[in-house]
Image (cartoon, rainbow, N blue to C red; front, side, top):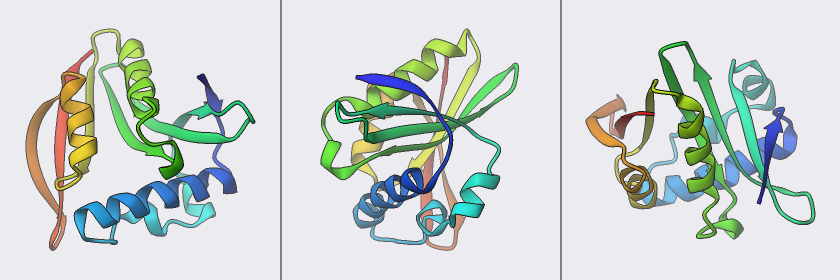
Length: 146
C-alpha cells in the first residue's frame, strides 16, 4: 500500500463524493457538507492530504487534517467503496497517529456510521460527545492522545 502526500484535484473530489455517498446512505441523510462541495471549495480548504494508491496508480483512499503544535484535527477520511475492507482507512488514521507525537487528535463521524465508529474505537479513540451539527444531522466526536 503506497501512501503519499497529495494535492486536492477533481479525482480526489470524485473519491470524496463516492465515499460520502456511502456514509449518507448509512446515516440516512445526504446533507453531509463535503458530499456537496465544489472543486473550488475543496481547494480553498486549508487541509493537508495523504492518499493511498492502488497498483495502477489510482487514489483509493485519502485523509485530510489540520494541525497545530497541540492538536491534529482529522477533517476527512475517505475510502472508495470498491476499496472497502482492505485496511485503507485504518492505515491512514494510524499514520496520522504516528505523527501525533503526544498531541491531542480529534475526529468526528456520522453518529449512525457504524463502520467508521468501529474503526476509531478499535484504534483507541474515546467518544467525547454526540453533536447535532445541523437540525437532524448528528455526528459523534472522538479523541485520543497520540
